[in-house]
Image 1 (tube, rainbow, N blue to C red):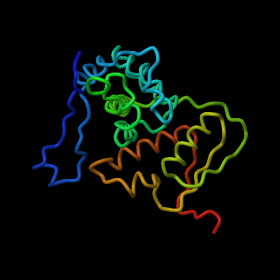
Image 2 (image 1 turned 30 degrees about the vertical axis):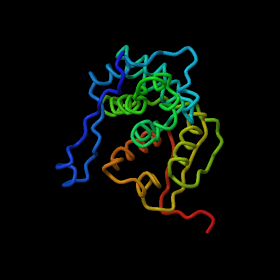
Image 3 (image 1 turned 90 degrees about the vertical axis):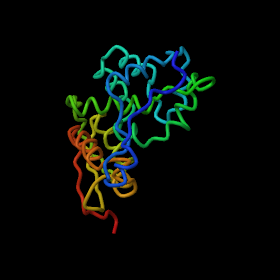
Image 4 (image 1 turned 90 degrees about the horizontal axis):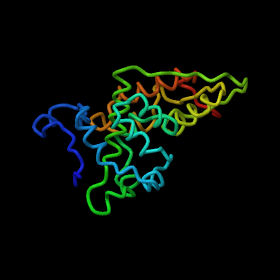
Length: 211
């Protein structure tokens, strides 16, 4: 049993001070498989209790161990519409990873890093979109920050005809305007927004609702 998380490569300090590129480089397939092997597959997974959206963490890690990366990202997306973002900026160390049984004696499983690996794999290999049958009901969502995007995607999956109204000229809210590029690249946010529009969500910018 490996006591510590599998190390994730980063830009060396001498390089990162000269650019705004992402510092953390993510896991390779080999590194992800090693880290996934650390998961104990607990019968009562405390990590799920620590996850705000209750992702079935052992299940998606098991899929990674099986090299079924499509299966892994599909499990994550049952609960989380922004996995590439959450895999980078979600504070897992005080949520799911803090509850990990491994953390009682060793370092917890790198749940966030594995989520990022699965989402990055999907970016490289193509997103599968399954559009539900429309129910004929229209819904307006105000704001395209993480809450608005998540709500819109969930509603679209339920069959609602969703339109997001955004006051700014660009979508993403705090994801774009509050988190630096080296922590969360704007291209990652754009890809997640593209996924949500492919679910059928319409986004209208430069609209201040209620003024």
